[in-house]
Amino acid sequence: MRYDLYYWPMVQGRGEFVRLALEDAGAAYRDVARGANGMARLVRFMGRYARAPFASPYLVAGRLVIGQTANILLYLGPRLGLAPKNEADRLWIHQLNLTIADWLVEAHDVHHPIGSGLYYEEQKREAKRRAADFLAHRLPKFVAYFEDILAKNPARSGWLAGRRASTADLALFQMVAGLRYAFPRAMAKREKKARRVVALHDRVAARAGVAAYLASPRRIPFNQYGIFRHYPELDR
Image 1 (cartoon, rainbow, N blue to C red):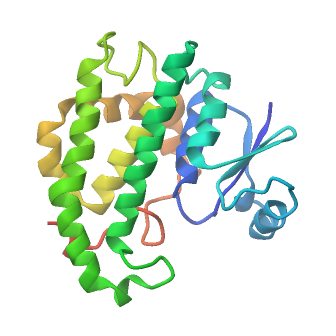
Image 2 (tube, rainbow, N blue to C red):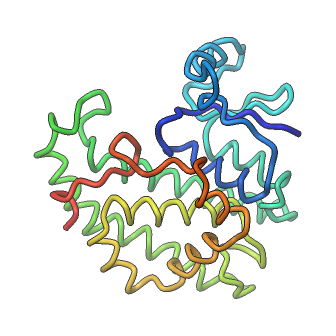
């Protein structure tokens, strides 16, 4: 199977969680919007399907058009060797990916607390208040949750479920990487109490497919247009 991934070509964003799974598995795929006439193709293709996705990312796999990041990972996981065979375990991985999706929204809303249609500069006062709450309460809660999940895995493998890496492990890696970019000071403090989460990040980064991807031009650098943005005044 060759996959076509449709996502904005200038940011990592939600599409990066799908890219990481495809790259880790060495899957054949096209990052369509980064090719010739990419943006036009992204918009045109999104509107041509009866079951059109609300927004990118979306994945075209044969005749299937699959939207929503966690939904795409639910589909790809078994096909890329990144999901358990047991149904209950697959649903558990999906649940973790949905939790990470919630966390991602909260990270984004730190710098856009009023609305995504407004510039950051138009909501800086509100962003400072949101950042203070996120870093004091929400970030610790999410990190502690995943630290606890890693500790309670009966397999004691260092992965979130079972003995093998899954799409949720790759997603957690991306969250740590993105939060380190956005909030380096806050994350340096938080990681002192999250050794398992940090170890998982490092293990994912060392996987052959991921390591090659991170060292390649296919990995879009973090920037001030994506979900994770670094504003020093918000990093306390």
